[in-house]
Length: 203
Image 1 (spheres, rainbow, N blue to C red):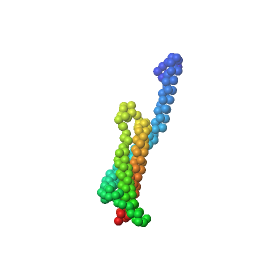
Image 2: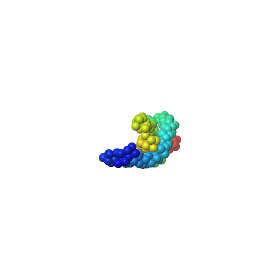
Image 3: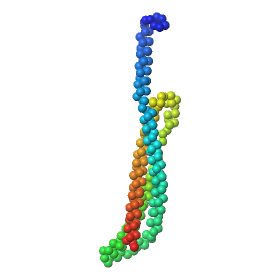
C-alpha cells in the first residue's frame, strides 16, 4: 500500500484504516452530542428563572405570615381577656321562653366557638412557619475538573436536573404553605364572625 510517507506493509493497512474510520465516527458522535444539547443553556436559564420565582414566593409567604400571625395572636388574647370564661358557663339558663333559653345558651356556645376557631387559625399559621424550607442547589457537587471541562451545552444539560428537582420541591412546599395560610385566615374570619354574634346576643 502506497502511503504519504512511503510504502506501508499491507498487513498494517487495515488497522490504520479502521483507526481512521473510528476517529471519524467519534468526531461525528461528538458533533451530534453537541447538537443535541444546543438548547441546554437556554433551558437552564428558564429553569433558573423558575427557581428564583419559587425563592421569591417563599419570601412573600414568610412576609405575609409575619404580618398576619401577630394580628391573629393579638385578636385571640383580646377575645380571651374580653370576659370571664367561668362566669359565662356559670350563668343560669332561663327557661321562661324559647327566646330566653336561646339568649342564655347561645352566648357561651358562641364565645367558645370563637376561641376554638381563633385557636385553629393560630395553629395553621404556626404550621406555615414551621414548614419554612427552601431547596438549595449544591453547586459544590459540580465543582470538579471533569465537569468544568465540559462544553457549556453539556454542562447546562447536566446541572439543569438539580435546578428542576429543587424547584419542584420548593413549589410543592409553597403550595401547601399557601393552603395552610389561607385556611388560617379563613378560620380567623369565622372566629371574628362568631365573636360579633356573641357580642350581639350578650348585649
